[in-house]
Image (cartoon, rainbow, N blue to C red; front, side):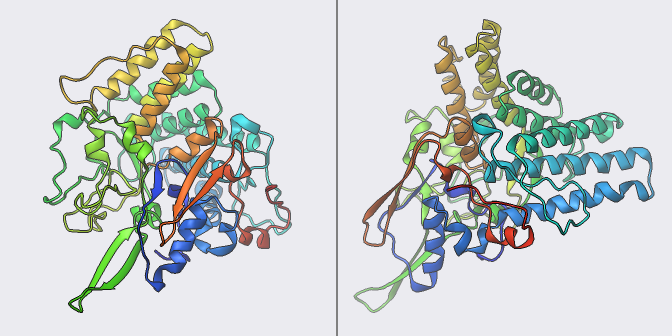
Amino acid sequence: YDPQDGSFYTVLGLFDDDVAIRQGWKASAEYEGQVNDIRLAYSWSSDMKDVFSGYNTYGQVYEKILGCNAVLDYVDDVQGSEDEKNNVKAQALALRGYYYWFLVNLYGQPYSYNKDALGVPLQLTSELDESGKPRNTVGEVYDQILKDLQEAERLFASLPESMQVLRNNRVNLPFTQLMLSRVCLYMENWEQALAYANLVIDNNNFGILDLNSLPLPDMYGNPAYMDYYTYDNPEVIFLFGNWYDVLSLTMMSYVNYGEETPGGMINWTKYNLPVVSESLINAYGTDGTDLRRRHYLIPDEYNATPYYQPCSKFRVDNGFRLQPSTTSGNWGVAFKVTEAYLNGAEAAAMLFKNGAGANYQTEAQALLDDLRVNRVVNGSFENVSIVDPDELVAFVRDERRRELCFENHRWFDLRRYGMEPLTHIWYDESNNASEFVLEKNAPGFTLQIPNEAFEHNSAMVQNEI
């Protein structure tokens, strides 16, 4: 972990209710700075932006947006066929839409809560503007995201079919439609969220991996836990980034402590300070029928402790310290067809709740069943049958948590669900507990833009704390 690297997802895995802090830890002096960084993120402290540079996701994402803008500004001036140029334009627009979606959900309030709140500045060309750019509203940023994604969809659809669904480390038409489904879900445009989800689901290039077809993880085998972030997985639409970006504070945050034994030897222990929360573990039930508890949750130190590691679906090799392999592809973020099933199910459940008709109840349950039959032990599966609309919505959202754990969705989902109160318990080296509470709709649900941004853009203002 290097606090200067400004990783894309550095702090995201410490905000939600899927993560906790282990008890009874001790740290050697060299790890004090790292422990402090974890504590700041885990407590939603506004001091994050002042203390460690790894917080600057803002600058990292704008660098990528600049690359997209440069492509869009100059692609027409290079050689190539119209299809080739449209393919490049579509990729740049789709990625720019994704990057702005990511930014506005970190640094702006949820669209459903206050779309008129300050979001992030929209920079849509590669030309430098020395006068600075003020922050656009959340609503304005979302409007641009939709515009980018819809134009990307149009351009992809104009290409020969053979160019629309390439799985060649490039974004494609299904990725764009999945993002449109996600964006419409966040905007509570339920009809469009469902329609785009179904476009992805109906694409025969992707399918749901049946966990019943996989051997249970073997912690003495190699790998002990398989890698789901690979194009060999039929669920994968697009892979992005690397696992170090995602895990540099959570999974890779080792605490190293040496203690002298009576025989004069130094007994070293090494472990992650963050662990999986009990509420997530319990979400899978205790009867063993939900295969995701065994396949998605990775025990800590060969089950020598009651803890699970704060990551999921990465390859894990054998050895006393379980950790993602550095030789397994290293992808950190996956866009998968399974999200489309959950986007569609939630949108259909909300339409049913809003009185649009019982056919949406049926559709929501069918989408859930299509996913869950591949996640439950053969012979134990039961179809979803929920009459109450609120219970159906709650079940969909619980299923989303179980299926997409540690895939960078939970924090954003908790925001759009209504920013209900969150409590984190921190244990210090003496095992004293401190409680941190994020009250309903608290400012801490929205990150502060880092100081570096204001040094280069005098037209911006910070969120009110």
